Length: 140
Image (cartoon, rainbow, N blue to C red; front, side):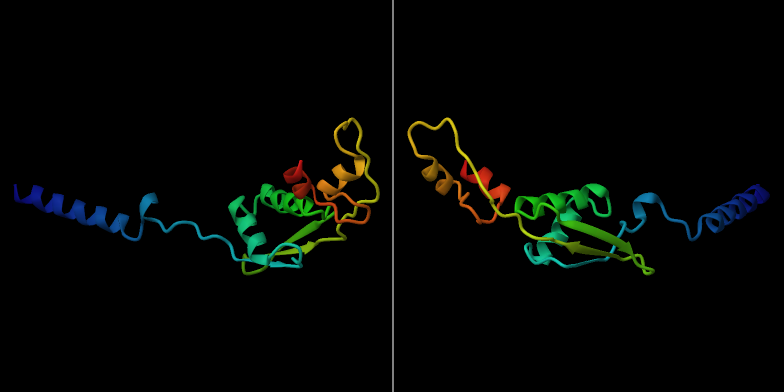
């Protein structure tokens, strides 16, 4: 009987030694978001760009698409982003906004109760005005 207790004790010590230093999956620290640096934002505040990227799962491609869509909504139709992963596992995103699109001409057809000039003014689509799809959608 005494030998059985000694064997049980030794087995429990061996089990403790084997599991020392291991953690369960739910005890592990949550994954840390990578550090993110964004440069070149002028039309959108940098803080908004970072929040948009993080909120859409950066470094997933959909996050960059969301940032590009935000620039298109502001009239920067050809905004481009480049991403570089640094040696310290952080990311650098450089935004090239390009030029804001401008209205060169616009036509309105099918309106009977207002003039073309009134509709274009209400939609803020005067010649030379910045073209902003987000604003246009809000005004329609």
